[in-house]
Image (cartoon, rainbow, N blue to C red; front, top):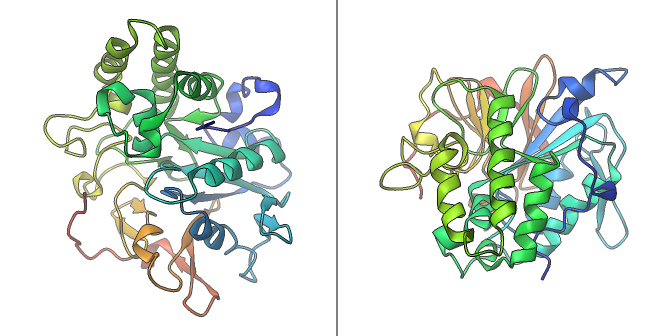
Length: 317
């Protein structure tokens, strides 16, 4: 089983200017590209398809993807950067198909136009000996699967965080400021350490060591791994205060797009699986952040970030 089929052109490293921020793409574009983001697909391909095609179904936007007659999605060659904001796999029935979708879009889009941020379920793939979730897709990785995914991190195709125009895209987030280039460099360093130990007698020790050494990204804190001391891929939304840095996060489930100060949560797919509509992507331009939300009728509504739900909700683990 090929757990991470993120096929990239000739497996070459992504140029540094394209790895960490939209400015690297915008500098070479005639007009600044909009940043489209989606999080927490978790192996639910149909929900992801519904969300990614909201742009096609709204009159204000060019399509992000186009579908073959059999429903296979392809890059539409419009002026976008697409961010998959962590947790591609686990829980749903179509993990391989979701990963094939992401890999296909990476391959079809120009370099730097499709980005993947590390989620906690991808972090499980980095350290399966630590987490031991064999019942999940991410916990069943082989040594070759892990090595291939570590290569994608080292080559810059998977990052810890991605800087948009006014927000940073990161799977879970942080309550205090962080430097995007620094956290991405620390993830690469962790991947290099793991890659060197992969399949050796030092493998399990290295898996534990990187969580401690690079805790800003991979740390699980004390007690529950989503607690207030957790790193960028694990922290629960309830621990992000209103004065946290501007971020678009996933990780914590909600029915609708949520905000707390300048932190916006987009993890809505799973809470809407049993009803018509609710799937969403975020769209950021240099001047506005909004959500495109699938309606129960099949249409699409645009909601500006100022209108996102901010009412307190119980935290879900």
